[in-house]
Amino acid sequence: MQRIKLLLVDDHAVVRNGLQMLINAQADMEVVGDAADGNEAIRLAMDLKPNVVLMDLSMPYGRDGFSTTTELVQSLPETKVLILTMHDDDNYLFRALKAGASGYILKSSPGFELLKAIRQVSLGQAYLHPGATKKVIEGYIQTGNATEGQDVFQILSEREREILSLVAGGYTNKEIADLLVISPKTVENHKAHFMEKLGLSNRRELVRFALKHGLLDLNK
Image (tube, rainbow, N blue to C red; front, side, top):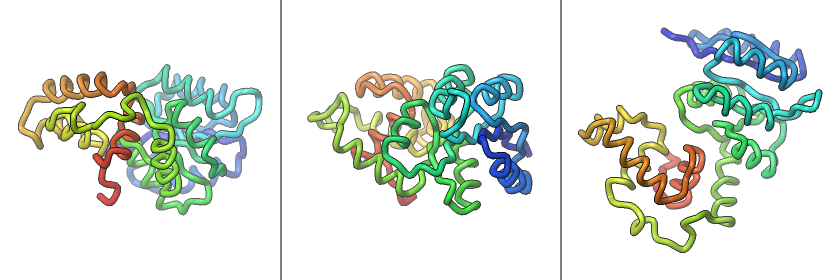
């Protein structure tokens, strides 16, 4: 079994030590490094190539979790960033998602929820704690997007809506291809077409769109 490799980024040593104990106790995870600030996190990530970076937002020395996340996502696109923070705040949440984070979870969350978030993010899926999910939905309804005022059922074909829903739900191209009995290349072509039609640039925007338009079932 291939373990999920994690890099911990938090300026408090006691927090990093506690997280390391929790994570290393799991059969499918291991902490490969830890950093106390953003600059150190970037250096270690470039060297260690972790699957997931568990990122605090408030850190010293001029580089916070937002700018660190942006650089990591750009430099290491295969590495996912999961925000672990004390800030249950709309502004922090949306800034983190804009920076490229794949997930957002609070330090007050129970350990089992954090482990679930790590596993989900490592698979390329998005993870938001329940309160954050509600805020994303409400915020997106209020602000709208490039397709505001247009009917999604007119913009997209039935097949495109079907594939969009599956992509937002965390399915890979191969899994979607197997489910729909089409080729992975066809899935990728449909995905490229609907992303262009909707003016979406990444999976986080896709998930928000699917949530807003009822194409993603949160109860699954």
